[in-house]
Length: 406
Image 1: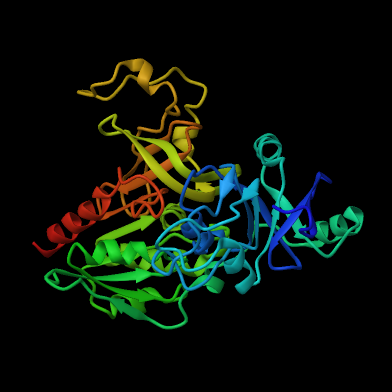
Image 2: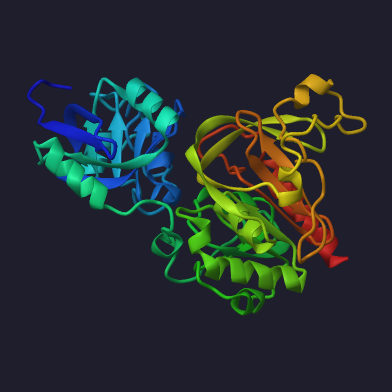
């Protein structure tokens, strides 16, 4: 960027201060400082409701190359609180671009900063965890800005699904030529546009409902299946969603959840959730299916996760379990799987099992009820952006609904 560009400042709650050049809207913003490792997909990242309340740093060095178009947003607005990049692209080079990234951030009132130290920032967050922060192009005293950072709310206890959800129900229908085979009630905890679109392409008519709907409201739509979406905030603060999920489970309607919806299912069946040190955000997270040993490269955006059931946690110091019968991988392939993760555990709705784990850190990435038609994963099968490894989860949901009709 030009040397004449106004200066800006990024201050973390531990006092770390980075100075750089302002881009986007002038002003300042506060939020949880996190990083995203995706090499592409910045427009989808900016408009993902799961980033509500967060300042996002991109680890890729050059952002904005292809500008901003009107086809790729995942919602009706930019949701990040602030944006941190190493170097914004000076030009938008794509036939699809309608405006530059800088112009889009200005139009939506999002303050950004370009700093040469995004690598150092990322390492700081990896070592010390996500923390509160502020980006400002109007404050020149880091001590004064730090005082306001320390007075700002954290992510623990934040109920943000209420903020990002749709105010009114709406319906996404299958495209022309695709027969409607299922009716799905989707609870919008921060849903991305690609999710109901992927379901509609598989013959699902998706009725998207506000986050605070009750189980009675959901079941009144007479759905073949119920979906709980991704979203921002602390799942422990979304008791209304947990209560609705329990009502759906009691009714025995096929259920599928992703990301925040997976954490809600975990809490609904009696598991705890906890805050990760720096979260999973990017498009290259390796996740293992514990039933087959297959590893998926997946798209993630979450800062909370489900805890292992207590009986599994008790095995944390024990010897590694043998691999499942028939698994094609040698025992060494299971070294990153937490001991006890493959053992079924009890819930108020019958036995359940952890189905997927993250191979970087052993975090629970999927659970399934064994006696009711319900499952969830912590990652994003709609992959917007990201790899398409997990697209078949929408087909698994369709199969679950087919079985429910028998």
